[in-house]
Image (cartoon, rainbow, N blue to C red; front, side, top):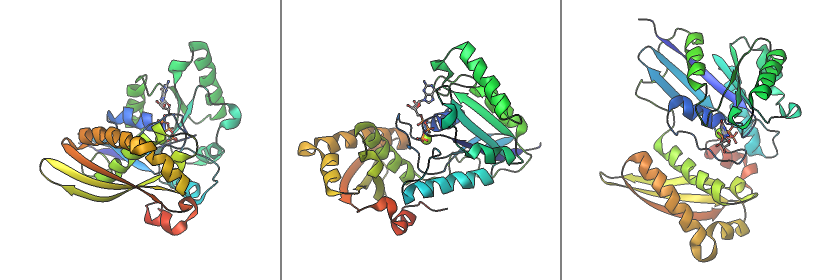
Length: 293
Ligand SMILES: Nc1nc2c(ncn2[C@@H]2O[C@H](COP(=O)(O)OP(=O)(O)OP(=O)(O)O)[C@@H](O)[C@H]2O)c(=O)[nH]1
Ligand SMILES: [Mg+2]
């Protein structure tokens, strides 16, 4: 029996639905999803395994013009994903304006790999408009195959997966077949906490936050987790904690529920808040926190 395997790297602007699409392809909630741009900060691998195939998806940070060193590092992940793809899946969405389309598509066109363009969120549009968009993308990227999608409502996801399987090269699996990701539980726990912060705080706050798991003690019936929420300034620390600690408590409760669902047992979650001044521009800290290739 021949076996197919390869890297399908999902690229696109922030908020177009890259993480939602990867999760839909996997049928699992692996990457965190929020209505805020720049939710994903890392390259996150999600693996779809079948008897005779292994699709290694990469969810990547949305393409932006870097303002901080953190952003530069995020764009390094995007560039890496551009270079090692067997198939590129460029994602746009029905509301994306022509001047918002990232410049990277010029580079994508020159790559010698199959190119798929997904037009996401068609549930927010209508047939005429979607047909126009398909035409637009076919003209703009003549080498691409174009798929209207709704990652949220699972529209056309199976057809896209089927096509990916056809295009996938013959290759032995890259990862053990039981693996769903290259990331460990600690990573997903920190992401769940960050998701709650993105959902509950406004403006700059979630962007100034990093979550680090300090300890993870596993027992048969209970996992004890201690995590630190780092912010950039004292004032942000006060906002995260909230009056009488209420805001932080809410984050803790919501995150714990999701972590319990992930690990399938009870969780005891301790959250601390600390200041790491201007960490988003601190090369050493960023490397330490995993923002390196
Ligand atoms: N209506 C609609 N909303 C969608 C669809 N796909 C994703 N969304 C929503 O779009 C928002 C952004 O989704 P994400 O998957 O986090 O987007 P992303 O491209 O990963 O964003 P970054 O990680 O910030 O680059 C969320 O609120 C999703 O629920 C879709 O098909 N239809
Ligand atoms: Mg994302």
